[in-house]
Length: 127
Image 1: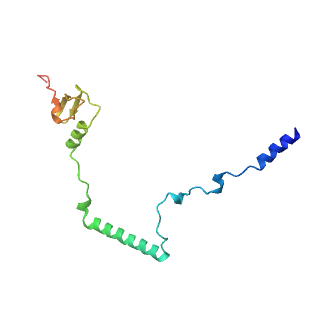
Image 2 (image 1 turned 135 degrees about the horizontal axis):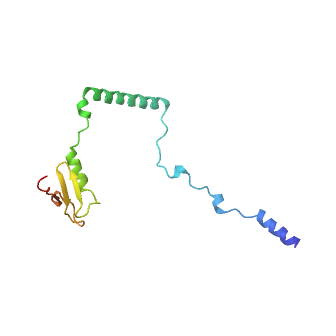
Image 3 (image 1 turned 90 degrees about the vertical axis):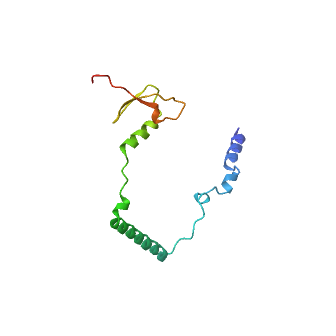
């Protein structure tokens, strides 16, 4: 019994190394594109100075011509129409309300929506 346990102990200690331990695995650099050499301190400073100059020019341009940078106001009616035409939850018979009144959706779910699919709801007489 003593010889068996001694042999087992020797086998655990004297295990042969795996192939994975012999060859190094991939590193992060194996997955990155090849990079340019590191810039010198002077090159780095020159890049920073050029970036600062571009930022100053862009700032000056914005101050001198603010009309070029104003957002274009969206037409609320156009936005509402687009929202209705792109609403996938609408089903035949649904009623939608807009500034122009109430409309019943009469389109089909298997066809693209069109403005003609929205039929005005006629108000009751006397109101």
